[in-house]
Length: 487
Ligand code: NAP
Image 1 (cartoon, helix red, strand yellow):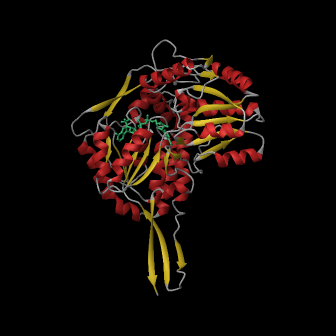
Image 2 (cartoon, protein in one colour):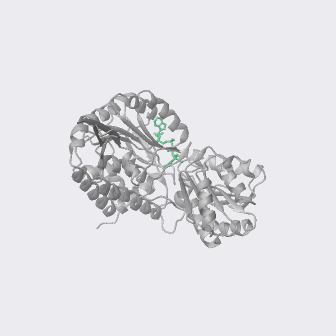
Image 3 (spheres, helix red, strand yellow):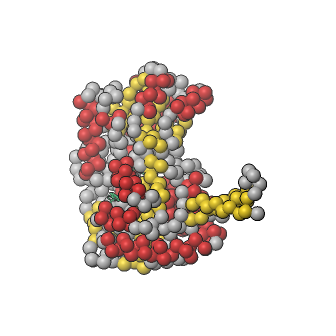
C-alpha cells in the first residue's frame, strides 16, 4: 500500500456537495477555504452551499425516505458493518485529513478513527434488534401493539473537534433505524466528513439517504431546513449557545431534537485516591484532543491533603509534552483550532492569575505561527475565576482544593452544565454516593475517559438532551406507535 501523504489525502477527498447521490458544485459556484491550524495556510477549498442547495439536499432526503425505511434491517446493518471495515482499512488517510484540518497529532486522529468506526460496528448490530411490544389492556378488551418506526428525514449538524466520531454516532443509528439525512459538518473541518460520505457512497448506500452540505452561510442555509415541515428531526453537537438558538427554531414545528452541548467537567480527587491513577486519568481527561473536548476536565478539585503533590506531578507530565504540527513524529500536542480559541484560552488563564491563581507550568502561547498554547497547570485557583464557569477548550488544568466530600460535590455541581464528571477514590461507598449526588449525565470513576460506543453518551442541564451510543442511541431515531386492536 502506498504511504498516505498530505498531498494524496487532500487529492482524494471530494470537494463538492453530496446531494441525491451526486457530487455537485454550489449553485452559485462559491467555495470556502479550509485552513491548516498549525500554519494558518489554506489547505484546499470546498463548495459553499446556498439556501437552494440546502433545500435540494432535504428534497433528496425526503425522496429517499420511504424506500429506505422499507429496506430490510439486515441490509442496513450489513452496510454499516462494511463501512466499519472500510474506515478501519482507510485509517491512515482519514487520520491525515483530520490532522490537517483540525490540528491534533496523527496518533490522536488514528484513535478517533478507531473510536468513530466503532459506532458503525455497534449500530450494525443494533439495526436488527429494534423491538416492539404486544400486550393485553388491563380490562382485557383490547390488544396493544407497540411498534417502532424511523423518525424520518433528519438534519445533523456536527462540530470540528471530533470531525469523524461526532458524525458516525449520528449517521450510524440513523442508517440502522432507517432514517435519511442531511449532514452539515463544521466549517473548519469538512474534509473528514466528505471522505466518509464518499466511502459510504462507494459501498452502495442508496442515493439520497445521506446528503452532505458544506457552507459558510451556516445560519441562513440551516434555518429554512429546520423550519421545513418535511424535516422530522434535528440532531446537533456543538456549543450550548448555538444549541439554544436551534431549539427555538425547532420549536416552530415541534421537531424531535437531540442536543449534545457544552461541558464543564469537574475532576474530583479524594484524599484516599491512588495518586498514580489520578494523574494518569487527569492527563487523559485533560489532554485528549488538546483539551478541545466537551468531556475535557475543566476544573480539578483535589483534597487539600494531596493537592500540592497532585499539582506537581501533573505539572511534570504536562511540561514534558512536545508541541508541534500534528503531522510530525514525536508531537504530543497540536495547535488549537483557530486564533479565536487560542485567545480565549489565554484570557481565561490571565483572568485566573489576576484573581490569585499560581502558574505551575505553561501559561501562554509560544511564539511562531499556528494557534498553539502551552500545556498549563494552575494551582490555588479561586472559585471566582471565569474558568470555573466557562469551557476552557484548551490544555489548561486549574486546581482548586477542598476539605469535605460535601464541599467537593457542591463545587462540582455549581455550574449550568452537566455532561460528565470524574472522581478518584478507593472507597466504593464514596464512589457510589458521590456518583449519585453529581448532577451529570455521565460519571467516570477512577478513569479519565467515558466515551464508549456501547454506553449512552449525553448530558443534563445546559449540556443537552438525548443520548448517543448504547441501546439508547438508536431510540433517538425511532418513533413509538401504538395500535389498539379491539377484539
Ligand atoms: P458551534 O460553534 O456551536 O458549532 C457547531 C456546529 O454548529 C458547526 O457545524 C457550526 O457550523 C454550526 N452552527 C453554528 N452556528 C449555527 C447556526 N446559527 N445555525 C446552524 N448551525 C450553526 O460549536 P463548535 O465551536 O464547533 O464546537 C465546540 C462545542 O461543541 C463545545 O461547546 C463542545 O463542548 C461542544 N461539543 C459537545 C459534544 C457533546 O457530545 N456534548 C461533543 C463535542 C463538542 P459552522 O462551523 O459553519 O459555524
